[in-house]
Image (cartoon, rainbow, N blue to C red; front, side, top):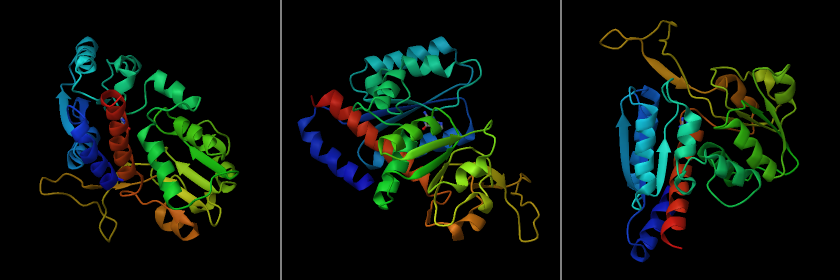
Length: 287
Ligand code: GUN
């Protein structure tokens, strides 16, 4: 995907007056957000998208943040704006998302774009669900008429994932923290998408043999040595490692396909952000 996007940008550049430019805004110093924003910025540069990472202090007021967004909305040289979530407590993410010009909304979080997606109109699609759809398509995984269980009902993953799968004619169920029996839901499923954020939550007993499992979870757990003891760095801080929602060692032997964490859905999310940036750029610059 990255190579295709890079080639397409190089081909388009001579017809356009400027290169694509993506702005990534991070408020505060959440370490996970720093990692994601840096990864998106670096991936953009590699395919020929100019990227600006704007790191703002956690103390910034909502009004000041909205002013920054407005400045990027009004700047014709900026084609995509991403505000990394979560935001500090005193800032309402709904207000911030609605302040982004829908034509520059690379995340597809703005209600106008969510509405367009819901009724099947063209426009950006949320990066993680879109990345998962491309992954399923690439591996030739049939969706029409098949049972898909989604775990998690967030606006970022669960809900848009359900819409995209429905559009591909899957039979979709969404399980969440108030569902009575998640295992019943997942054992019936041909495809399971887990976006809960709890390590080891999808056990082997919850998976039908031959299922396809997509793990969206990113969970930090303590790094243990062979004796099961925590490992520390030179400053005596406990080291951690990243795992998904799925008990990978137990579930993997049952599956037809399974995505690893890290290295499965994450890189697809980033590639989808690049793809959306290109789509927004084309709509703003070349029509
Ligand atoms: N936080 C976690 N995932 C995302 C994402 O896809 N976009 C934004 N803006 N923030 C996030």
